[in-house]
Length: 99
Image (tube, rainbow, N blue to C red; front, side, top):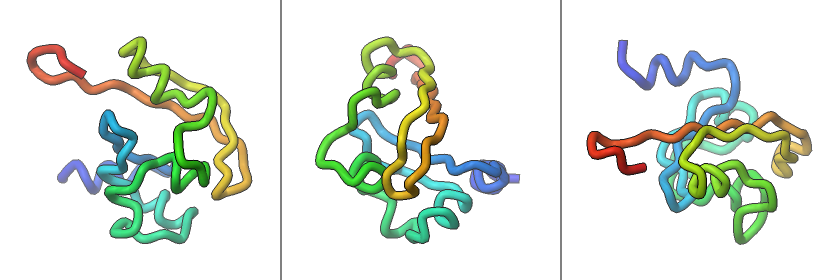
């Protein structure tokens, strides 16, 4: 089984971001709830899509992760869906320990 099959089995929206807030991958649940194809999501900034903003919103957990290099979780409104979600981000480090 490849990582994409496992990623798609997650029953919550999940996205993989780079350090510039760009979407690198999305799971099927993300596509289903947003109604936006993966081709339209990948390469875009998450805050443009999910928060309809030109920059990350206050309280963005990825902003906090970039400073702390530790996992972050917060409740935040996801404007595209008109709902409040628990948003979690986890860091991934390379072999040299770089984020």
